Amino acid sequence: MPLPQQEREAIHEYCIRDLGGNIDWYIDQFRFIPDIELRKRLGRAFYTARYVYKLMEALFVNGDEQHAFVKFQVMQYASIYEAVISNLLWGRYKDHPAVFALENHRVLKEVPGFSKSMSAKFDGDEAHISVYRPTKKQRNSISFGDKVDCAVKVGFVGDTYAEEIKKLYALRNLAHIENEAGKQIDVEIEQSKQAYWRMQPFLQHIIDVTGSG
Image (cartoon, rainbow, N blue to C red; front, side, top):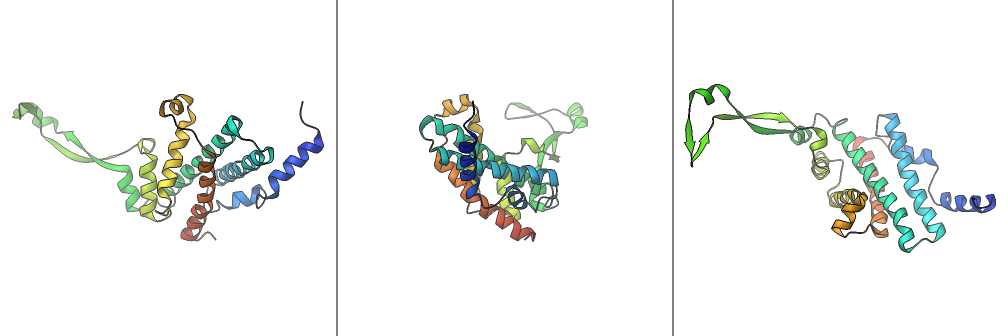
């Protein structure tokens, strides 16, 4: 059975009292994202992360009961950082030299004709003639840390908080209980707070850089 309506309304009013605006305000924080549907989802993710924090505060949750609240916030914020950085790298900045370097690398390709007609040894091993050729990486194979470093080079992520974003993303990957237990790491309330504190400078910097103010 749910709580009486008066109590539910009191909790809800507490949660939205200090949020700074309704969900439309949160959506507008991502106005530099041209994809309207993605913009809406990012705004909702930001809004719900804040709402859950205020709900945790309203209920004065602590101990083991606090874990779910904190974990949800970390996952939301990490997902926001990831989506924004990826969207900008392969959207607005897709032609930037740093993005080209990020998604391309050179690999050795054997030259087939020479392999049949020539035989050589090097340090006891059979040697083959090969050439370096540029090869494009799959985007999902590029680590998030490399994406953040690229975003810093492009200029829409500040290097003062880049490492913190990487650490937050690593915490998100502890969503699997087995990973969390194996690494013996718990997601703490201070980490979720830091994720929030960095969000506004992160977004404001992008707004300034992209001229979306």
